[in-house]
Length: 400
Image 1: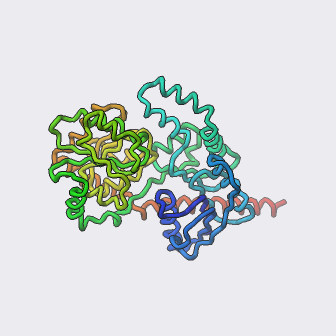
Image 2: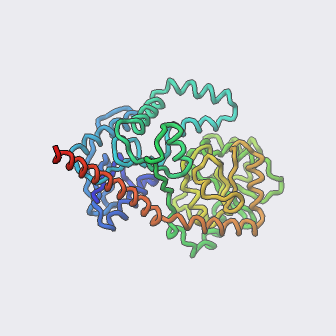
Image 3: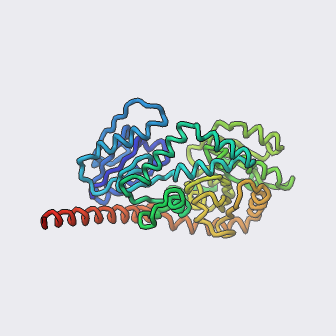
């Protein structure tokens, strides 16, 4: 197949969607598919030599207008091309397949309000968002993506996201596909797990007898660090649970909050970690009380490393978890008592080991190869559909 990928910047070292696109391109190329990349910036050294690059130049524009500029420029660049499939990963429209890995902006905006515990504050913030040009611009662009003239096949990365497409934009089930995110089991080989556990616990001043909870995130507020710190305060005074916070080096006042709550001695802010294996192997379980995550990568990664997971129903990755088997799913991130209780369940080593084994087994089902086959099936379906449409048009023309 001849497949066109559209994404503004493909620099895999930056992580996230860019790393994913590079992995998918390499796997498709391995099967002999011809990949075209429409982008403004890319790292050719991280991609197969067979990839054909198409420079998409963007005029200067305010940051919130860049998605409009790129989406319009992509459509212009694709005009007259005859790709079997065109795929957009972000703020693009009019393509054959749309795969927004970050979920829907409309859903993100609504769930972002949940981080404010006071309902009145939520209403005030929502009101002022109506005057936010960036906010309104993204909502308008999203409506163009999913309510525009061209019907695309839309891929959701979790059942939650798939349901959001139907809730916010009434997208037909016939136009929706579910393809879950993948975990690379080879990335988390455990040959040196004990060595890393001892070494990094020493470096982070974690006692061998401590039961270490791991929190990972860049946006601490959205990922639920505030309620988690409040939950830490509710733990028994002699609880062995310590909390390690990984991600953003800018703590945004959360260190002060930990101090005010009297839990600073139980919390370690370690900032960015180059190799997440060190964090997973040093920890005993993951706690991710997010207010919104389409399907957080950290959950299947932690599960693949044999860690039980505590998260919320606002995380698409909670669908990997059977309650009290691989972990615990909490209904409300603001339920400090339930968060605290959930953490205490993994103090017992036997409970922790059993849940960790179940987590590893479940995560092992969602490999990149499994994911790739599902994506390829969508591309083949779209290509076949377009081919049938062209044949039908040719037949109609010939008959007239």
